[in-house]
Image (cartoon, rainbow, N blue to C red; front, side, top):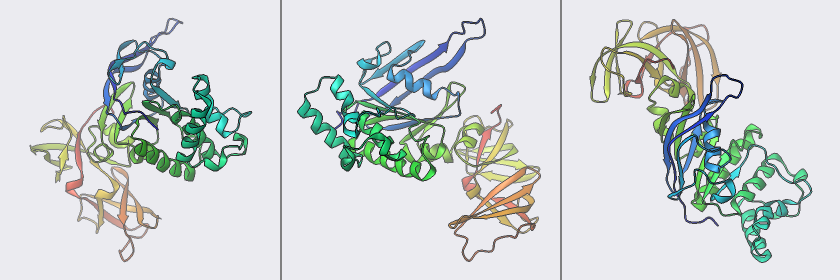
Length: 366
């Protein structure tokens, strides 16, 4: 159904909103640059107000950059309106026409493009089959579940065979189970078509499960770009580390570096870290990042940090132990707990690190 996949290039793009009341201008996107390769799904991830939706709107043509260039398939589209760009957008609100049935909603974009009726019928049939809605063609949107309505909106975007599919928080109106199901469906459809896609979300689980690469943004600037595993395991800053997953941060002194590894001290106790971020150098302020799965519990005085187990949460495949320490409450994940001794609530313990899985980050305002 999709055309030959194309690349999307964002080249030093800035978007400034002028404040007409004499206040300070708002820099929504600040000197952003990245490339989405043909057939790749890239997610823009970040908190509200970070610039991710503005970036998507500029790719779609609903907003224009103040500076920089946007290219789709090598063509500079920076000043083109949305209808002149080879894109289709799935919005947060489904925007379905209540007086049209499913097939008519999906066909709408083709009709306004004056595509012949026979071709419209064939393309709508293929789009509905692709999204699992073949048996719902005659049904009105009001008789569909939220997940089915989202599939209709996705079908309506796919049926026009765009070069680039843009998705602006499309699952935010769904409950948790439907969100999980639709994540799988969107990824399946995108991969089966080989279509280039840009996805916007503030949900780290969506970003990590859907994406080939993730772009983390804050305050209009790109903070890190990488595969989900890289963003999670090798973040470059405390902000990125905390935004994409649960994390504990400890102030440390860096004593020396050996390639990617790092030797440091925490309150005089020697610690080795398996990796370090750019900027984490000997003599510079730093923090040690530890994910819950990289922490271990043991008897008091045998680890790096002592504390007391406040609460255990059983999750089936794991137990989460919340431990109160001088560094705040630490979350320790104990995988496959069957047959393992789980420290009781109120018990004194010590926390140690899996040195290969902890990372030293430069201390910063983030």
